[in-house]
Length: 255
Image (cartoon, rainbow, N blue to C red):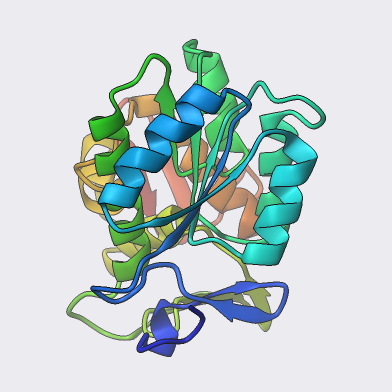
């Protein structure tokens, strides 16, 4: 699957190897579901197979981590309550190693649980019971956002202070140091950097950076901003670039 007809700008890194996050039409993406309920696995497999995806499955955390490393899937669906190694820990480890899109699928419905998952770098969060059609649509949306990244009309290189974003390569550097961002974090940074000084509301950020298919909430935006600040080396108490405009949203610019 690796490298078939995909421009280098749409590939992401996993342990130094290039991985394609969204295959060209007619070639399936690989989705790994890590879930201990066999009925849920088969239901998800059925609907994603109908969409043309190749589906791999693991029933516990350690197996899921092994399969993710070996198969390098294009997306991971991750239950939180898993035997062996819980989903939060699997997500934490995967996010250190890769920017593979992660969709959490869980019975935990509290907002704090959702925020905890997003804080770890999950791209979306689906609660049980769920509609398999809706899940399939959310998977398509995440893969679409991953594939398109933030490459739109406009300059291919954005630079402000010591932050440089290359839209064609989907790469970010702070000074000379490369920074690994998830697709959502990259889109968020590019959105803010394109219009420094402008305040974006959380609703605008959800629509333009996270996508209108994202089933988000205001604090989800805050979680993604917090992750982005941390990766850019920002002091959350005295940020240099990404500033909170209380009651409104965020803007990018020098302090």
